Length: 118
Image (cartoon, rainbow, N blue to C red; front, side, top):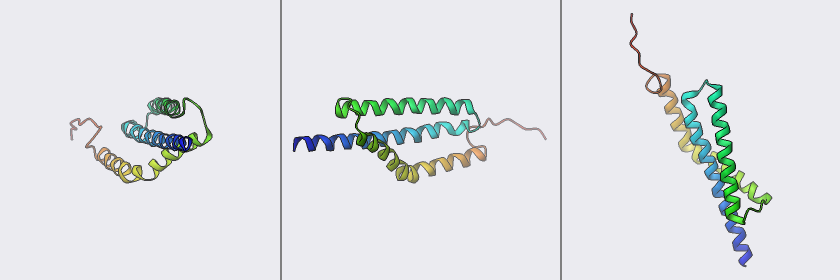
């Protein structure tokens, strides 16, 4: 019975870590919005995301099961990220991104307002 409780704890920590990785992805997507066409910044942000995601996954595995890497832990981390991307990101993140993109398109955000002469 004690071992089953430990396995459930590992599963929940792995799902939580995956959800946090999904949230980090959403945050990096928000940061990326103003730099839409700059490939260098996109590459730097991608590298930073993968570093932070790797650190979060390693810390979760270390905390949950003393650093033992188990297939179901990795699968549950991926499932947690997919669950986050499927539900909360679609509900909140997409709406926020659309409103920011619309504001950027019409010049309300991220653009400098220079006076134009006619």
